[in-house]
Image (cartoon, rainbow, N blue to C red; front, side):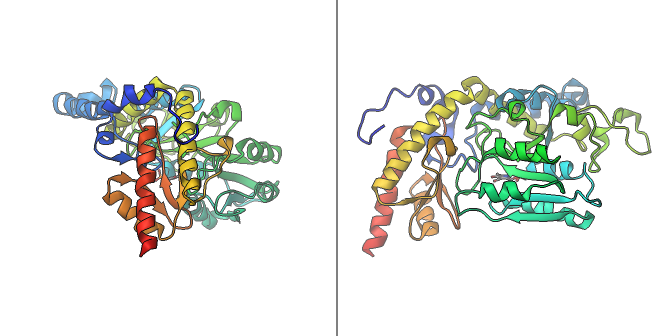
Amino acid sequence: MIAGERSPPDQLAARWRREFPIVETCTYLVSHSLGAMPRRAGESVHAFADSRMTRGVRAWSEGWWEMGRTVGDLLAPIIGAPAGSISMHQNASVGQAIIGSCFRYDGRRRKIVLTSLEFPTNIYVFEGFRRYGAEIVVVPGQDAISTNLERLLDAIDEQTVLVPLSLVLFRSSYIQDATAVIEKAHRVGAHVVLDIYQAAGVIPIDLGGLGADFAVGGSVKWLCGGPGAGYLYVRPDLGRTLEPAFVGWAAHAEPFAFEAAAIRYADPPERFQSGTPNVPALYAARAGYEVVADIGVAAIREKSLRLTRRLIERATSAGFRVNTPLADEQRAGAVIVDVPDGYATTQELIRREVIVDYRPGAGIRMSPHFYNTVDEIDHAMDVLRDIVGAQSRG
Ligand SMILES: Cc1ncc(COP(=O)(O)O)c(C=O)c1O
């Protein structure tokens, strides 16, 4: 759409804005960080409180204990996974640590290959496996935006155990070529741990079709599910054979037998669970998944592309540098706009109720979601131009 052209009727915003109170109070363009909270998540958290207050310990056998599985099953169709393949955890870091603990690093095959553009937690978690013999190979990015795919593929060899890979890079919103990485990894006998945090709920994902071995992420961002609800997908055939060292009693085949011996693993997905599920977070997350499933990721993506194109048009016509791929097929939900003194500019945007964030080395991250409108994009860009103009006038 060309700036100034009339936009098509925005049915998603008309239908959903009332469900997200915060979008009526500010220009909320930060769903890559914390998606807006749906009213029904508030109601769901109240339902948790009611069940705790009125049912007490009986609530465990009235749905709480199985919530990791049942909430994972709600998420599964959103990311192209079958029922029973997802376990729920505190966050994505825990999910990755559990996967890391399924493998050995004391033989010839002991490399973990990842790029310098990964979200830092991915590097921190896998660096920790050096003490068990892992060799960590960090492949430098092409630039601030994208991976050097050729170098990454070359680094994956017969000595590689794992390749942690963000489907969407957090700094640039760049969609990585997961198909090529999975194909190379499988050719040499390695496994790929896809981090789908910046992808789930905003771009279509087909974990089954991709043949991903593992996937991790959380519910805080595009899924509008809130903190404390990380997820771990394990490819069903792998899930039946892997034995995580990082376990807890909820991963036992018979947790209520309270056996004091080495674990007898449950079937997936419980096999990858640790201890007691994070029940209140799961109540909240469930509501976000329901909204995203109700709208459908294809419709969210279609709208997201319309709004991010608009953002890019407005940013480039104002002469700002965009640190996000311009091609639709390479760009996920955020647009990163680089302006002089980006940190101070971000603070001023927030002061003027345009809620965005800033990442050093990237710029101001701005993310429309299904509840935002074209008018909000235009307003945010008008305010940004105004702030930058005032700065340059001195
Ligand atoms: C791509 C990506 N991975 C991981 C994380 C964080 O993971 P965790 O759930 O462990 O906090 C983020 C958070 O911003 C992220 O953007």
